[in-house]
Image (cartoon, rainbow, N blue to C red; front, side):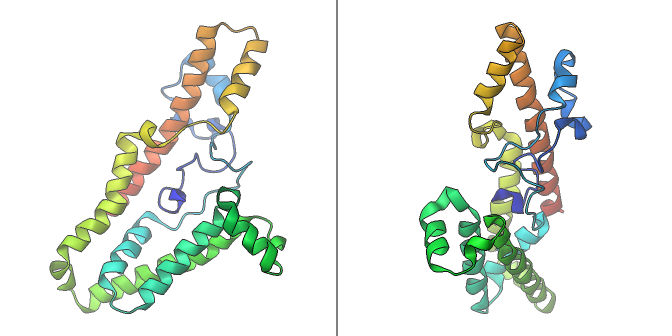
Length: 224
């Protein structure tokens, strides 16, 4: 979900970590070549061709629009956005997913449940544009709603900064069962436990680097 604001929140698309050279800078040189071939994506989908990214600045303006846009359209756009995100969770929210699979004809023909996020990708920019329109036509609104402006910044830019500063508090940089699988493969290669620990720490460090770099970039976009 957070890839809407931070595209590489789960490592980006499925592919080798080595495609991102800067991610390997802090990795132990002894294992750098091998870690470069590990998948950079660590989300809970089997694989992905890329994240669903709405834009860091656009998401900020979307949240700001909830406070500045006077039309009730803002609540419809919010509801549609949240609803499409819940559907996009798929197996992570099975009650809603099963209800749609059983009662909505053609829904099971989608190649992936995440395709429903096109609704969010329409509603988020639309409300963002309406927010810009309000600010353009009524510049004084930023002074009148200064507190709401800072709340919108805190919920977006502040959250990005928090992710950057405390990544391990929010993210597990391994897929479900991946830690155990890699450990088992390394043991077959007759590596010592210390070497295995260094390798696993290197994978986590590389993925953390991808995550924090993107979180910081999104923060600066919103801050500017």
